[in-house]
Image 1 (cartoon, rainbow over the protein chains, first blue to last red):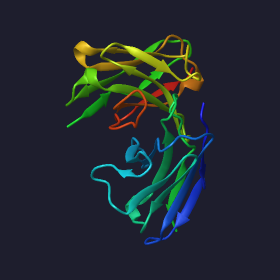
Image 2: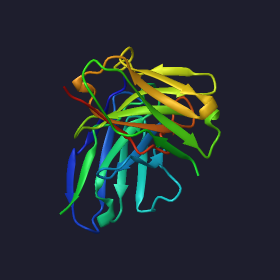
Image 3: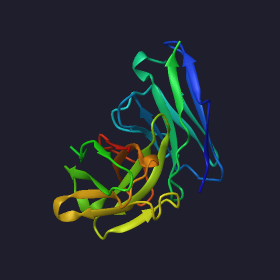
Image 4: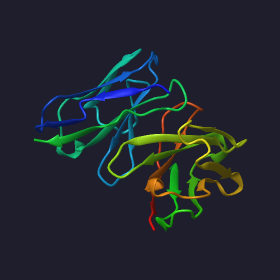
Length: 107
Length: 119
């Protein structure tokens, strides 16, 4: 299985801050990388697919970049409703492994 | 609107069997893969396996192969996840979601089914 390593595991930031989460794959996965948001008590929601494509309806303050083994997820200006846990997921190979998650809190 | 609706929460004893469901609507059920994801209490997401309802092609994560069975009944647009003998360690939230191809992104997701296994 491809291993996905996310960092940090938790993050505290202020409203309006720029927030960055990284995800590293154990081998080259091209751009086959997704980002999900999971709010407490809710199902995950797809935000970004193919490393950098914003899902329809997702605010433009969310963005993703990277290819190969190193990927970045960015919130340009943190909003209170962005409090959630964020996961990366590779889909270059089955099983489509997830990162361990990054819990984002408001400072 | 594409929607997946999962069956309700279950409380079972160790050793019992269980089958939970995921009903799709608003799209061609036989044209998209459906996947299952486990989330143990307070933990992250785990990819369990996927099925293509069109021909029942099924793929499992090695971690879940032999532990669960994924199936689908295309006549009623429903996918299933089942256990023949539950363990306490199967206590978790289970999500289904559609996937556009055999490898791809999960979108949308069902609301989740909480399975509690306790003596």
